[in-house]
Length: 323
Image 1: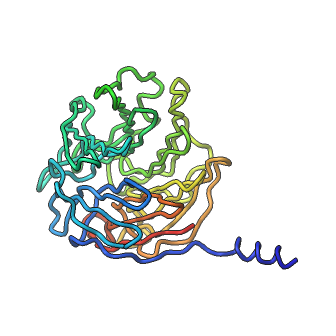
Image 2: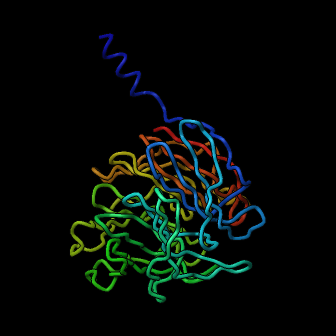
Image 3: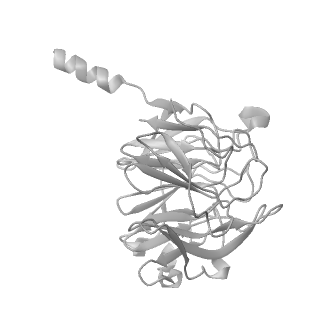
């Protein structure tokens, strides 16, 4: 009986938030964060405190809770970058660039973590250039889904594929049913669980045009194409972030919330069980925000920066969520 009581007590422990060291370069939003080892994260690009697009590269050491500014920085300034890690390298596949207004760039680069060097890659087809795409790596290929072509620009349903070892874009070889999302999306949450690529929520042509859909593509069986999950998100959100922990995908924050008044930010944390395809609420973010990024290391979700009000309103805050 004592063992059962202890087990039940453990099950009852709630998810927790822990505050970590703030970003070292001030506020940052619309960046991307990637895990590069079991002890290190890298945060790339984004918008800094004055609203300008940055080449900033930041390295975070998990055991010491310390940030450092990486050298070299990004080859070009990018916000809403598309990126993924594969085989010890960071693949940076376009994004948005510019000062007062942003436009998509097709320029692509790879960073060799071992040699600490950036090298150019074959550019994305110009017709597929965009930022804020859902980006995952699977089986020697990086897939981009959806995105936006410029600030205030067009939301797309495009699915692109970059083949790593041949340094070629193979989007045209994808089956027709896999080449387009069921609907155009930008600023969506995304994750990969096993071979399945999930695109959650997001928006279409405007910060308040928020969506509650979940789209799935099995990257091991592209001929099946995309499908929409029957049970939609409890809270429609754009500008959210997502991270997989085991078979569950946790979604955080977002913008386009009329109930939050001028702040316009969602606080919700909701989890999608990929095995049952059901949703549950997991409370609220410690600091509600959008335009951030989320990565999982050892079962914990790290969320640096973001914006605390709809649109521009960056923060240097950094915290970790433990389910």
